[in-house]
Length: 144
Image (tube, rainbow, N blue to C red; front, side):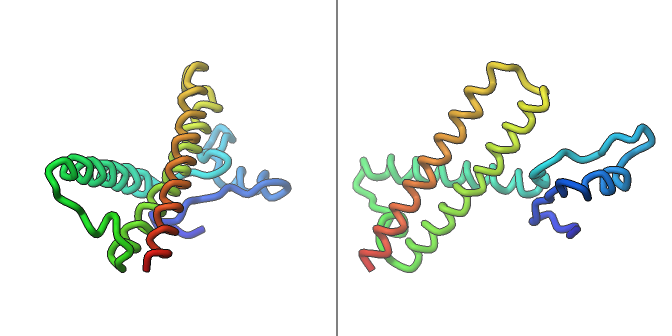
């Protein structure tokens, strides 16, 4: 497997799973790694920081609009605006990884049963966000 902090790890399924589990197991025979997608700490932190940065950028643009300032790189079909929309779309898609990792933790029993609603709502919000970013990108591409 690659040891890059930018590449998520996937566990094998099926017949090879038992062989890999014995290779990765400790003294008690249990696997050190979880099944499925496991994000590296660097990807998680980068995604969270970029999401907060995007939120602040959109919030500042919204507030600045009350005072007559128009952020062209956010709303126009310029190459900078298209690049910004692509960046926002990638960050929105990365948030799916965070949502599914949260669901895995809840499934393992590390979280309370009532947290299922938070997980489902998080996936729904991320889906709507990706949809809106795709529409925003398509509208910028059409203006160009």
